Image (cartoon, rainbow, N blue to C red; front, side, top):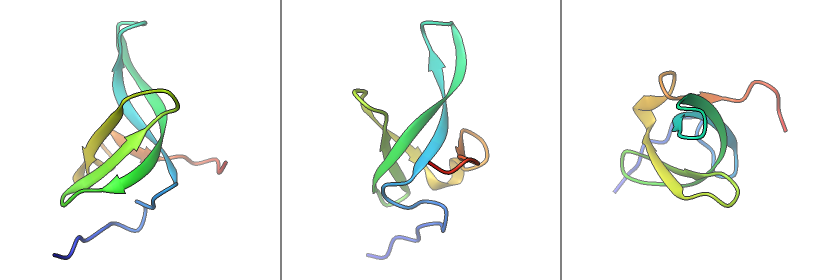
Amino acid sequence: MVINVPDWCIIGKYVEVLMYDPDYGEYHWFEEKILSYSTDGFFHQAHNCPVYHNLFSDYGLTVREILISR
């Protein structure tokens, strides 16, 4: 099986993901680390948080690159 991984999606890289924040009652951009790939997306996690999955096609909608490098 071949997985077509976009150039921006690199394991170990940090991206921002738009998710609902129950503490504030609204959506917020969270910095998450890319952990691995699935057939149609990637898994990511923030420190001491659950692992989440997004599709590669979510790029530009709910996933964006961090402009300032770490």
